[in-house]
Amino acid sequence: MNGDYQRNKIMRAIPVLLFVCVALLTACGPREGARHVFQLKEAPRMLTEELAVAKATETFQKEGYKLDQWQLTRAGNPPSEAPDGTPDQYFDRFSFRPTEGRVSFTNGKRYRTVQVCLEGDQLVCFMFYGL
Image 1 (cartoon, rainbow, N blue to C red):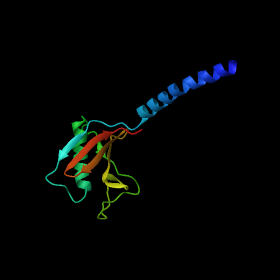
Image 2: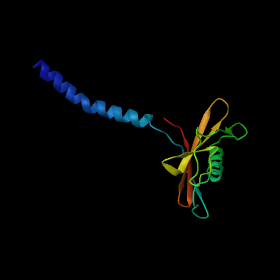
Image 3: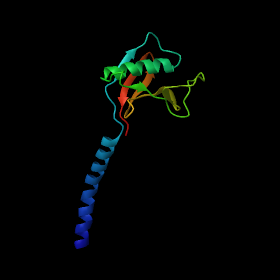
Image 4: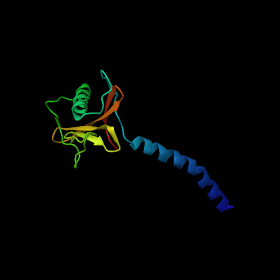
């Protein structure tokens, strides 16, 4: 009888434990800031580093960061490259989706990242806070 009681107690605890695990995983996942949507005149052939950095910088300023205190930092090593083969210096383009990537800034002590995504004739940017 004591064994049945313990087994029932454990079985009732499993859903609660699963709920807590899902809640923790959700809370610990990547966080993102407000979406900044930039309407382009037309859909570009590809997302250039120049456009990505310009709109990431504008987003960074809109989020309240002062550019005189922060500077662009070099993208990943080895650097990514645009679909036309041009190497990216500051844009860390996703290899699995070249229309998306990240631009990072540093103030010497901390790093901040803006995620950039080309969606047709719109460029969507938001602060990425990682895991």
